[in-house]
Image (spheres, helix red, strand yellow):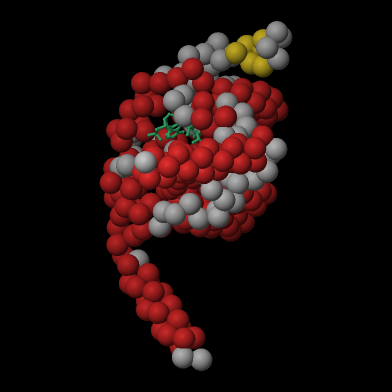
Length: 324
Ligand code: FAQ
């Protein structure tokens, strides 16, 4: 009897908490770290936010490869600043994810074990300087479309991190577009490099939005909880529409012969996406997965002494504060 009463009471508390959470979501209030939230919501965010953070950090690698080969001092300075921003975005996102009760160490170990993913796009190589243009224009361009929408995501720390990230991301997109525009005004070889980069980065970029809505297992909960404000396909369509026009302005052709304006939908229709390639790449079998992880692991291990020194300093400072 006592047990039954206790269970009834617990059930009631649980129902009240869930109701209060759902009311906040309905009112478009943000959910904050100390608010009660369903375990599924917390887990969903930990998965998505750490994937996002890992993407920013792993995403530094393809571009980092070109710092020493940038064609001018101006280009080198801009690229350095962009890559540094990406490291910063990773840090905001790790900090925001930590408010959900997972440690940075745990997230990094999930990345290293393959339990946590990072964006498909960073498993492709940056072969020429035009690839740096294509990454900025297409990859950052796709990332912004998604991230602008995430500025209104329901979890407060994630949404606030996105506001800041979006400001920096739009500069990144422009630097990439500028590189491509310049190359398209250059020599025949430069134009060919720009076309080749466009051809190689287009399809992986539109895969960044994730599987079609009907094949996306997480979209249902994400939309219900207002983590996602727009579906994968809606965001992909938005990206394609704006990128087709930008490509036309600089004389580049999108490598999709099925691309056609659909008056009724108010969007471009596109050709079939090779989802077999997508799942192969996110499953660890892309062209650079092994290289990316090996590099991350090495740098993480090489940096162990920095983390130990910071921790020792923190302990010493805490002890001093206790004795004040
Ligand atoms: N890559 O049910 P859904 C950037 C996985 S930041 C790898 O649709 P969801 C800046 C998904 O995890 C780029 N895996 O999943 C930059 C799930 O597998 P799981 C990162 C993907 O979460 C630029 C499965 O497929 N941005 O680029 C991908 O509802 C230049 C089923 O998918 C973000 O992370 C993918 N593209 O929707 C940095 C934005 N797509 O976890 C450096 C935040 C799907 O069950 C240089 N994330 N999967 O094993 C999101 O908005 C969402 O997580 C989606 C996926 C839209 C990516």
